[in-house]
Length: 542
Image 1 (cartoon, helix red, strand yellow):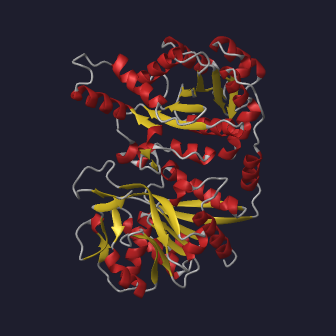
Image 2 (tube, rainbow, N blue to C red; image 1 turned 90 degrees about the vertical axis):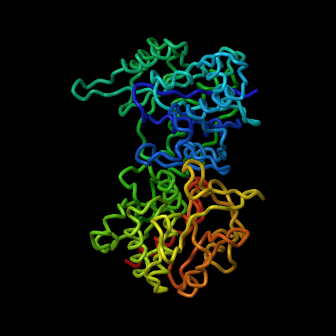
Image 3 (cartoon, helix red, strand yellow; image 1 turned 30 degrees about the horizontal axis):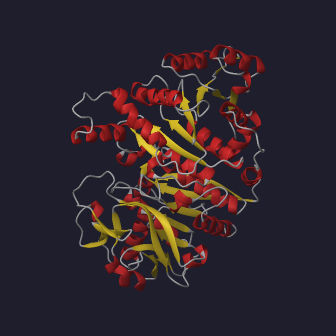
């Protein structure tokens, strides 16, 4: 039977519960335990797929096609355990499930209530599809006291009572603020947060205390006394210079030892953290430095491209180089000369996105990278803009465009209404719902022999994750290849262009998928490693 760790937060949001969950999973994994990590979000959306990146940050996509919270990206990057659809649950999904059961008559005409019906479904999700995991870590979004989160907290309380002793523990993440005027750390917010938890029947076993200043022994003792936990279970969570230091810092603070003690498990062997020390050393002691311009639509919020930023860091780790990111709103190129913003960068990356706003600016960024022979990496929408740019400026078809922007005479990029997944046909109506109707999840791609990407991957067939509604039109293949753009990767049926390359350019690759979703610090994605290597070569020319 699996053991369960519930990770909750208090006082304020954005304390880093996701990183705590991911780092703790990595520590337990390093101790020899099989882990599974999942996220429970109290908001009423079915999933974050239709939410603005400014509202929620990036949408992380799993192999099986689930659109999830960005924290699942942290989970995968820290543990390497592939997330699944069962690892992400929202209130919207729970209530939808309950209402479907009511409509089918599953409740035999009874009154449907939060307790027991909603909480029972939450408990089902918590315990479902755990496989052979020894420990399941469940992060609950939001903060204690949020009205929409109460059913999740109640489900946790019930599970703690129903499972055998020491099979479920609670790790509560809280804030210990420093008041500069008083020159003091304040423990009262933590005390009140724990009091709120205890008022709904939950007693934390471990407190993770986020602070900008070291927490003295006396303050830790005070927190332990007033919050009814052991002093050794008050774990400081101080700011670090790289998130990959977090597992090491938590181990030094005793978090993994306290978890084992709370479960009554023997400390059978210490974790081997050498891989994390090597990663941190690579980040802190680079041998070179490059600047990458990320030309996107949502550059005002770094979390909108969280996996992308981390994948570029991983590419730097692979090359012992620091990667500085220059976030540029693509619309600026529609008003100003690109040279002023791109003249000193060593690589240009155009990421995914939706809609016409900023598209022409992205196309101008592609033109600049092509003409000035700067390494270019186009991802999803960035590949589509590269294809449109080549069709317009190299093939001379000036009105080439995407039907995503409206009807056009030469739809180099068009809507995808039918595709194959696991030997079955999936369809989408052009005017149908937006949520969950894209080509989502992992699909195979065949690489063309003698192509750059074939050499980078070292394989003839790859599997990458997708999230898009529009495809490059295969009918323009002859036009593209006639102007020097090679389709270097295709779907196994040969119908969907997946990768393009530009002949005669130092490094110019566009991919329809999202390779950033599979990159990890201990296993950098080969495309990002190669792109940063090309940027390093470019830096030596400047």
